[in-house]
Length: 141
Image (tube, rainbow, N blue to C red; front, top):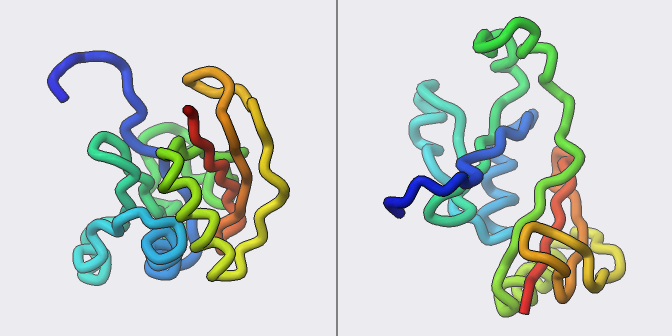
């Protein structure tokens, strides 16, 4: 994309086991893992791709001491975000529900008309990853 509209580039999630987290996001959520070989070589933290413009970085909690970009940044290790919301096409939303059920990931009742970046969503639900991070999935019609 070549325009300069603001976009969400990435969200960094603290995780205990980045490989297990990447496996969960790849297998259960359907997000493509990135940079696993480089992580194994000790070069970077792995990520998963949400779309062409957005990734989730899976930051090992053990890397907290490397967080020197702001005073006190290392203290954020283990402090999860309230939740991250994935907006999906209807078919992908339904497929995610199925994969979560296949992997015994609890999902509460579906909500209708919850407000988001594009207005009221047709359906949405929440789930947790193995690290306890909360995600919402939704679709708009």
